[in-house]
Image (cartoon, rainbow over all chains, first blue to last red; front, side):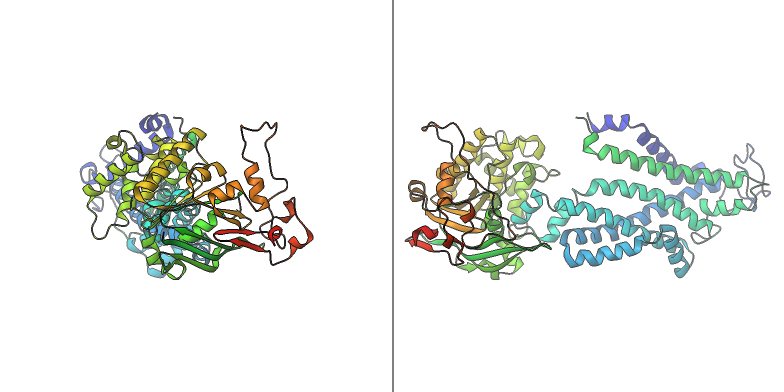
Length: 275
Length: 321
């Protein structure tokens, strides 16, 4: 069975992919999809949903639907950039710790444990609190919170892969440690990493929304789902559409990444691959 | 013949929490240019660790504690890691036990053989030239339809073919010494003979010396000029192959040779050596074989076991004092 058949068979993975594609299209083509300017306060405040404003307007008279569309940009941008940075930090640390072992591993592992003892959300609030609330600082905070999680996964994989005969064989052919790590150990450690990265993207969406909700991420008037949620909270009885729409979007985005992550875990598991 | 490799009193210990495992404990042997040496012994006798010590690839927590490894007059143990890396794969190459696991599953076979060449190419590698060399090497080890098959991945080859590819990689830089660590253990008996024939042929073609590590006396007889019998980290008998096969002196060697099933004698049962290999952390005092030895006497427990030498032949046994 080819990989495509397996993808087609994994319904949840497909649903996740479709959801993510929809959000991505929203973000990329926001300028064409959104009917109004997301920061223009052109309308009466708190208009209920109607044909002109499918999701109503917020307390400052901005179109909620347009803000929702543009908000997907921030969400995806933060998720991808901060998880990428987390990988750039975490992968080398995990590789070095797992590959060299001994004292290096003990020190790095201790640092990883220390970081992991804080829940991601607490750590990011702490860091943005110190650095000051802004989009860049939120991304830095999320990267720092996720790097040890990536490092831990890589380290675990490297510990098992480095014992493989082909790694010893490459060293016996005269390859250096760095070459062996990059060319042979890392490509064979990638599968669980890919799953972890995808699941991390979902968590990053959630954490970013939480930070925005607390006013620690992108600053107004930039449209962001977390910030919309925070604003809607005050009008939950008088204008429930303000909080419902971003809430559903955050849920869908996190769900998309989690479905893809779970699907990948199944697809990459050779035991489930009936050839 | 000139000396290629001289191993003197090599000691490689593994420092575990439970104690020190003396995997290789005072091993000495020589290997001349173009010669083939067989290292024979049971599992855990220190054969592989000896080989890894020569490559300086002893895994943690193992360490070469003492001894001297002279290769082409240079002391390998005093070289820097960078200098050692230039020797690995270029002057000394190694073939591993399990061909199913010795090739990286994520790269095609041509790339991996090319990598073995590229790692020892000075300056910028020219891939078209390397590709030509890869094809000629793989053809030389008997891979059919090489031009197509170099783009195949390891799992698309049979075990025997994979071992041929590994052997091809090991000769790709014309090494002076090939260390073959049980190259046929993971293969079918019918393939075993082919692999040994291939090694024999390549030995003549490239003039490399071979160090064959095995527990199969038959393979040693096929390929080797000299033999070192190891038991519990020590060489108990060492010498010319014909001499040892005709007249083994050490009781362990005698028993090993008797264990080879023979068709010219009528026996009902396979021979085996009674007893267990010694505990590696606290081996018996004196001769480590004495608990299993049929000729054991009280004095076999003494620390200085008699070493009998006759020219190149060496036996460490009290029987010959």
